[in-house]
Amino acid sequence: MFFGLSAVTSFVVIILIFAVTYWLLPKKYCGISFLLLTILLSVLAFNVVPNESDDLTRYYQQIDYLRDYGNDYLQRCFDEGINNWDVYRVCGYYFYFISKLPSNHYLQAITIFVVYGLMLMIFYKAAKRFDVDKKYLFLGLMFFISTYWFYDVLAGIRNGLAFAVILACAYVHLVERKHIPLCVLGYILACLTHSAGIIFVVFIILTEITLNTSGNFMKYGLIFGLAIGGAGIKFLSTKTNNSFIQSIAGKVEGNEGGGPLHLELLYLVNIAVFLVTAFVIYYVSIYIVEGKYAKDLKRFYKLSSILIYFLLGSVLSELIFMRFTRWVLPVVCGVLFMIGRQLQGEANKNKSYIHLKYNLPKKESWRVNISGYFTIAFCAFIALHFVYLVKLSSLAWMHF
Image 1 (spheres, rainbow, N blue to C red):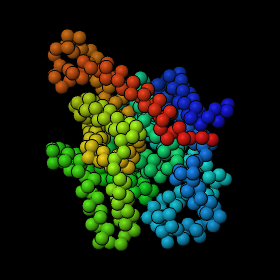
Image 2: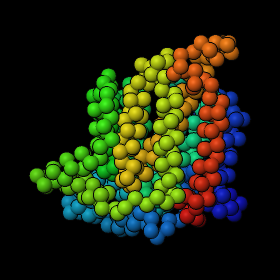
Image 3: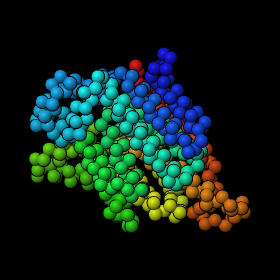
Image 4: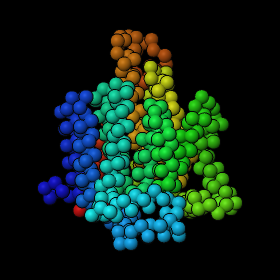
């Protein structure tokens, strides 16, 4: 793609181009670097050739059928449940749209454009709304870029797309409190793209219902929520023939039948992302909950807390745990880090060293005392995970 470079090297070059462009442009024009990154990653995705084991290879076959047989085949899939499109109709329509384009490669290119466009939109809107300094925005973005699984979105399509739509709608819904009917529509379309989105939407509903409540009962409920929810879905599946319920029940059984937990490097890295995110959320919590933007951020922070407690309980369910750590936590952690550090800096900007050292409340003083080390450790984790991303993750399978 880039002067004969490999696909993985091209990815690294794109990130470097983004970083240089970002720092060259004034803050008010940083959105240009976001758009450039999205376009370049989409072009990269277009040129990638899927591996035989990728879902993308199977999706190419489905698109070829749609290209050959058109709307008649699409309607047959809806009527007979082929490809599970009687339930996940959004996929059918999405693939049908791609079949009208001259190349199947538009599937991954458009998906990457939509996914990264939505995720970078969240960062852009959050940075603008909360007046985040350029350096904190960059660190938040780099955490997202280094921990977000680019190739898994490209090769799997549906998972990453569903989570991206839900997360973008959740930000607009919970933080900006705008376009809520459109956000609800986005939630529905995402759930009709992949069943994994349903859990995420349930968390958003819980966020609204339990916004002003707390306590151990709720925390324990979230920790054991996967088992409770799975049992509930299984019960419903015995009482109804609804294709949507049956599809979800099948996924639940598949998750439970996945065998013992495999503590491979891949999974341990996901656990590390979870632990870093949990600590970041805890570290910035007092600035988020008690800061000047508490009213705007309380719902997003609540959703983040719900995610952490649920993932703590689902750590033994590899498939669900990895989906959220790969496609949700990178954005949640990056956004809360940049806002939290910005608010911390503003809160302590005009305070003397003596005041910061001896007069702050205990819950704040330790955070201030380690703030420099905290940022250094955060940067170090970004660097380490980026090396892992390009050397040992699924990205290493990417080729032209």
